[in-house]
Image 1 (spheres, rainbow, N blue to C red):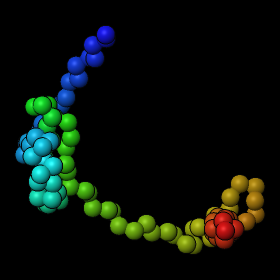
Image 2: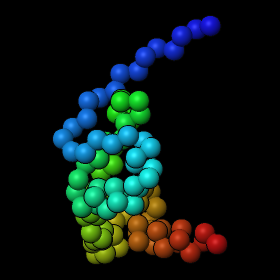
Image 3: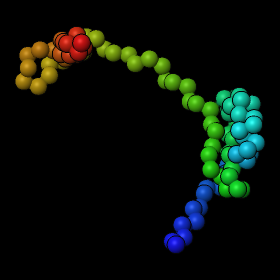
Image 4: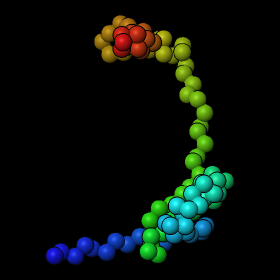
Length: 93
């Protein structure tokens, strides 16, 4: 029987380190802590296996320069990019 190679896991960074069983029992509390900015490392048999981190806030909505889009010609077509985008959207069913 072939022995599996032992995996090397990165060492946990600063923050809380908690075993899987404890993490399962305290998941909601850990989620709140991670959302508050704390990094939580979950271990299995003493080895780091997962990391809970806060989600980065989105950068905001995408702004489109409508004038540029309307004047932009695509390829050999004489149609504007604005027309092609609208046509594609409308014909998707």
